[in-house]
Image 1 (cartoon, rainbow, N blue to C red):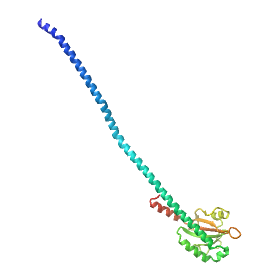
Image 2 (image 1 turned 90 degrees about the vertical axis):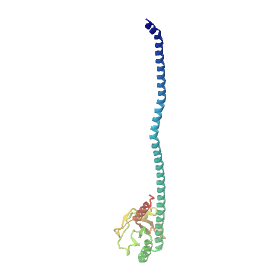
Image 3 (image 1 turned 45 degrees about the vertical axis):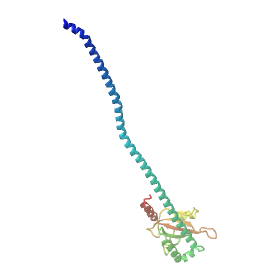
Length: 239
């Protein structure tokens, strides 16, 4: 009886202790879970952010470096092309000025002479033209044609073969018909020298007293000269 009375007396206290313990346990567990949750979420997000940045930053740096390098290469390439174009333009201008001077010299050399007079002085005129031609590596030959397209004298061909007729050449026909001068032909194959390839820088003789067409001075130019020049420019790294 006393035991039952003791149990009845202590039961409320035990129940209270169990209830209090459960409450404290639940409260503590809840705070811990909330603490862990509060620390775990941002931490994981920070790790994710660091991982992404560790991939993105090198990629961005490499992309920026590549873009800067590409821009620099483009700038250097444009500068090289500009230098090459300027060099080629200056050289071509000097070369074509030389053709013009040589054509003017040939015109003056025969001023006042009839076709028959030029043929009569063929040897002397040939020798003079040959000296000038040999001093200019870009010049293959110099031709003087009368008003009918018949060759009168040449720097390379002496004596001039009888019966040679160049009146069908495009440069002669165009200049005879009033084309602007100088006239530059397509690449042609020689007739007096069949293995020769050239293009003609041609202009009319100064008209005679009657203002009529007297013929054509034609400077034969070697295409290989310009090909070799372009190759040298390319070898210098300017193209």
